[in-house]
Length: 366
Image (cartoon, rainbow, N blue to C red; front, side):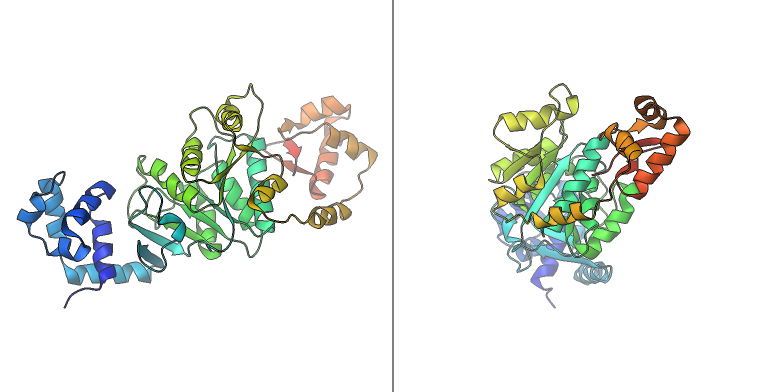
């Protein structure tokens, strides 16, 4: 008995060594997945760019019973599958250049009726960049905007942590490996939480390892699924600039957090602004561009519950910035002893004005 169409698509998506270029050649020649499956090795060898090794991989995979069994096992692990032409395939991907042939996902796909912002930036992010990414991720979520990124360390996961801190909002991660693999492993907590509030997405089949060449290509999916791309701390050759470039090609709004012109972490960011990207200093800049009403009452309500600081606390707080400072340095700035400074800092931390950013290092909490 013939397999269902989705099984043929799944089979073609999982053949080792057959990427988008070879897959497109096969489809152009045979016309459908079913015809490729029915083709003989002689017919397959006639196609330019298809090697004997490729033919061997295609032929050896023609086992309908095994294909259906593997597809069923995949579903039982909570991994879902869609493809171009399928009703679950995101419409935002349909007309982009080199649209993904198919998608594997855990959780769900983004809600196309709601705004979504892609966030990208430095992996070796500064402390202030990490704080900003988390804050903006949280504020996007507070205003009902979905967040999508790549789960990479640094800016990506910072924004996703911020979004995850708001109950009921959705965040999504597009992977450069199979959705059954958490990469980097250190972000396993966010990887699991994202599946509950949003989804883990990949064009690569389950089991695909995190190959370096996969990551630049996944950025086109991140930008395409978004309504705008937010860049935080992009150096001159930052990989996040690839996401911005895809976004520009796809007609997306590009938002950039500016930085010190002498700081290498911002060379790429500032160049984007120079070339016309929208400069972002607060969440209102993003929301205005997306045509979303900003409720200033949210911020005014926060201010009403702020604790009034004592004089000594104000002195210590005024000496801090987003860049972490050691308690001894803070004590030197304020004139308080180290023990007294530490007592004040702990009090400010309990009042949620500062946070510890390392062993005896403190910074303003935003």
